[in-house]
Every structure is written in structure tokens, then in C-alpha cells.
Length: 73
Image (tube, rainbow, N blue to C red; front, side):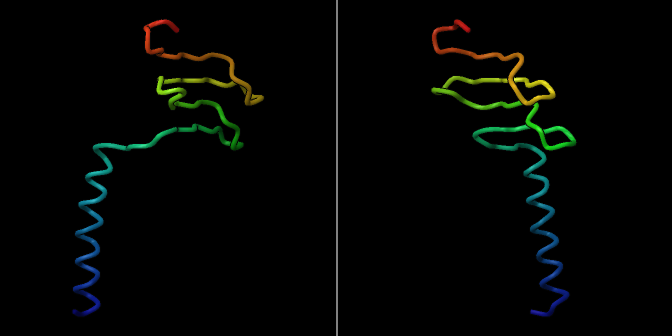
């Protein structure tokens, strides 16, 4: 296989992968940071319950939402 053929094959594989990633991103926890690298939001699970936490400029949680198993929270 020539270098050109290998490159074409890699480009096709990358295009297919990029198309699949555009449909879905799967992770256990998502951290969103500001331009200074400080944590500003988290989306994840705690004790198998979905949790969304929003933090202030100091990085401390200011608001949150938890979907508990029994519907409270």
C-alpha cells in the first residue's frame, strides 16, 4: 500500500468517525471551565442520580439540580 493510499484510507476512517461523534458524545461526567480554567459547571451522576451543578467565579457551587430516584430534589 502506498503512502497516498494509506492517507486516503485514514481520511475516510476519520470522516466516518467525525460523523459518528457529531451524533453523540458519551461520558460519565462533563466539566465546563471558563477561560481561566476554573470549573463553572458539572453534569454527571451521584449515586446513580443525574446532577447539574453551576459554580460562581470562585469555583464554589452556587446552584444545582438533582433528579433523585424518588422524584424529590
